[in-house]
Length: 117
Length: 107
Image 1 (cartoon, chains in turn red, green):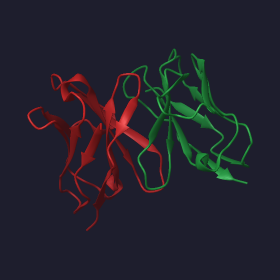
Image 2 (spheres, one colour; image 1 turned 180 degrees about the horizontal axis):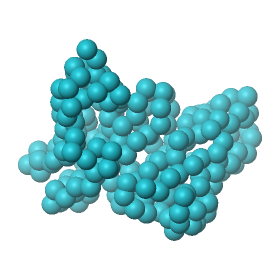
Image 3 (spheres, one colour; image 1 turned 120 degrees about the vertical axis):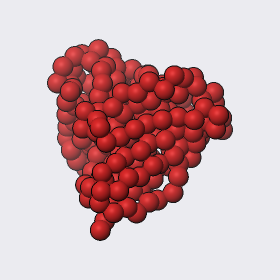
Image 4 (cartoon, one colour; image 1 turned 90 degrees about the vertical axis):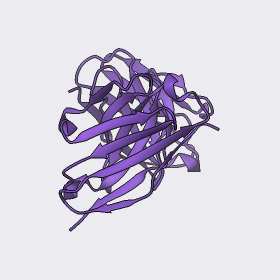
């Protein structure tokens, strides 16, 4: 079946970087983009950016420009989200989601990233 | 950025009730709006896209309407499984912003 499986929880110190992976299966990886969305504890959903799995084009939310890099590896149907200079308010569950242009129809299970000294 | 505002933030209702959640955009987004349901500890689940098209597998008790700047999600008869948090998201232009969410609670 179509699914996105994300990497496991991470604990990072302030100032460090984290790289979350998202492995797709059950569909043609390069036919869709992927969006990354995060959710701080008890808060709503925040769209971080999008990457085309076809050609690697990206579009990042202004808030994350300069701190985030989204990439894909088409040989393994895996997407990556790299967030640098972590702060305590980056503590959140990070989701990848298949971007169908008109909606996010398949979501990963989420990856909890905790930033704490 | 396009701001998305949902109302109410919290809604208390009973099984069998008909409920409506509203989502307003700060500028016209045509029909580029999706609705998601999220349960505690789970990823969001797509319910409706392009304002009114029901995603495959979603119960027919859910419906969406609207265009431009005002949209609604209606649940015709609440089931126990429907108590969750609901989010709208605009797809008109980057960044693809979400509403702040509406928590649907059991009365």
